[in-house]
Length: 147
Length: 261
Image (cartoon, rainbow over all chains, first blue to last red; front, side, top):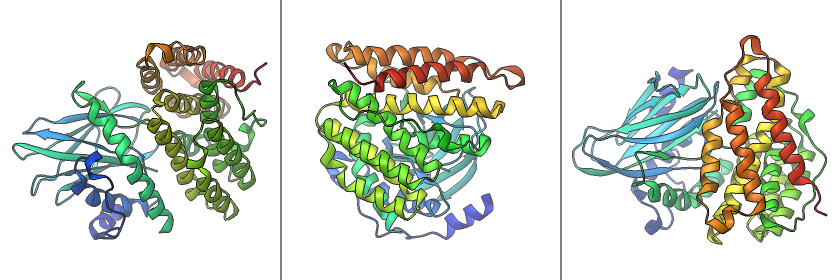
């Protein structure tokens, strides 16, 4: 299934290109990153994954990663999608389980966008770590899906 | 595809709120909270392990008028979870009944007009047995209520809706885990961090709101559930934790729904 999903992700380009554009730009940082994220999320949605209603955006400074807390449930499958405004940068995604151990993820990368899939082994608070290789300050956006 | 578009529209509408919240927290600490999960996530995990008889968790209809707005918000949250239960049971009529009650309570809270159209969609999807779309509509309905409350500067009520939804979800999930006898089902009850997060949101309310009787009760029950959820999964699957969580949450849900004298 993982391979199938990776192929699906790789093949999906512009599936949701006509999705509604970002609204009130003043209230939404990083509006340019969202279409790419939703493009990827749309492809996963076709596989039964549901997009959670929260999106996180922030600034990535040099190589210093950002951390986001999530509550995941054992047995559910998740995909985390992240986009960066730095040219050519696909953010790195690391997930730590409630005991602080890094979790093995199924990685996917495309220009400016990364995704990582996992089946949660435990219920609890996980930490998602988003990093990157570019220098300077740039915007990043993160969302996740579950099934 | 139209459903996906509708969902994306709803998502985009929500982005402003969530982004604002996330960005406000940006400098507050190193770890930020992305979102509180929906009961649908919890039920999806339980369904894989325990295959519960979801219809067994229905309850009698609850009042849809409350003198206190915080109490109305808590009960609105519990109704939302009832909607997810009906969707899991794939019971269209029950979904429609619950949807009507959700709209009645939303109206009582002054945000009914925001979800009227959703009520029609819920009814249409229920008639078509489109369970996946129904889950999305319930998500979207809840979020529109939350957004409307945020717009009215009623964030406290929005948090109470989330708390009510989670306490009812824990009541049902605990019973499902207990009945299954599966240690893995019990493991899905390890939600102390989530409960702490909800309690933390209530702790941040202005003093007057925080000390309102209904809010104090929720803070108290969340603290108790948090402690009970921390208990380790017992050997051999004995469902001590599930029983404790189930009793605490059931008592709260039942007393919150009781008609006020």
